[in-house]
Figure 1 (tube, one colour):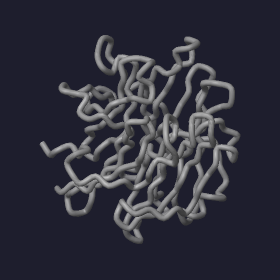
Figure 2 (cartoon, helix red, strand yellow):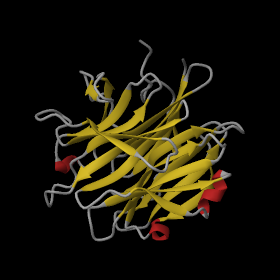
Figure 3 (cartoon, helix red, strand yellow):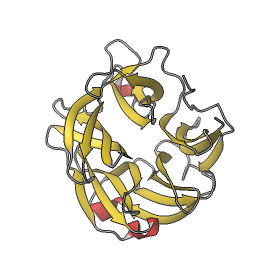
Length: 287
């Protein structure tokens, strides 16, 4: 079987440095798509301290390493208290769609909005509409959204809200759509395992074309924001995944992998520094 592209297989480059020093100063949680004009379009989240302003940033990059910002969306635009990982998708019509993660103020609830524009820069002012609203029982965030053979597929991190103080628990659910606006849910496809390193939950972060996946996991509530990356494989049961033994494999989170035309990979991931600030790193991995 082909290698799974992981941090450390290539030369790591800081694509976006942390916006400040200390806990909560984060750049990362990225999603990338190939740009037909060459290079990549990348969306990522910036957190300016745990009590600061969150932003979703869209950038163009000729090589995956050097970013030019083309759109910045503040949390205030959506009436949100926080923002998390976006998803960037090129539509069949050649437009750009951005799925944005929004945290409900004074709540543990999250929802996901979607915007569409002819050009990535147009996402800065594009009209937003609900894509995954969640409900009073479930917060939804950190989407992976892909188009395969004309059909939309999404893997969504879901946080159950039924136990006050335990809303950090997480699982991954799967949904499909004909148009990327109206979705059919197919239930939970990956969850944590009692007694294991991922007991508190499992959040899918990338799904390769062959169906293998990477996910973030942690053992406890105290490890929130200290997730590590594990690997999962299709289990052959309704789109479900099974954890691969030997995980976790690397101490990063929000791993995203994009296949290149030459058989190699470009990966991005959020790396934690000693003072708990996070930076967005990237590697080019040969085929």
